[in-house]
Image: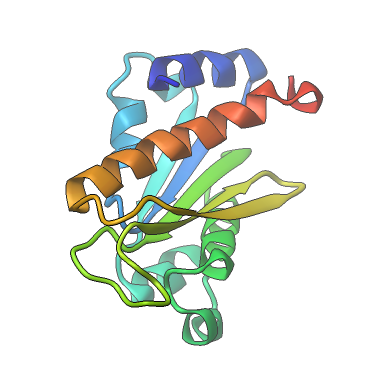
Length: 159
C-alpha cells in the first residue's frame, strides 16, 4: 500500500484522516504528507510520545495508562478515539509500541499496538514485528498503519 493510493481512496470517499503516534514519532503523518495533494484528506497528526502528551492532547485517561501500560490496545484505542474527538477527521489511526532497543518479556522489542477509529467503531490489534532494530520496527509500523487505513476503504460497507 502506498500513501498515494490511500490519499486517492480517502479523496474518493470524502474522508479526512488523522494520526495519533507514539513510537513512530510522526512518521505516518510524514508518509501521508509527503504526497502532493495530501491536504485534501489529511487533517492533522498528533505526536504523543510521552504519557502526559497522550493524556493532554488525546484525553487518554491516566488510569488506562497506569492499568494497561502505554504500550497496550487499551491505550491505542483511546488514542485513536481521542484523535477523532480533537480533529475534523472521520478516520484515525494510532500506534504505540516498543521500537527498541530493549523491551520486557511482557512487552518485547517490536511489539506495536494499533488503533483504527471511525465515529462508529474502534478496532485494535497488536503486532509482534520482532527485534528487528528501531528503524525497521518503525518502518514496518508505518507500512502496517497505512495498510490498516487502506483496509477501511476496501471493506464493501465503507465504499
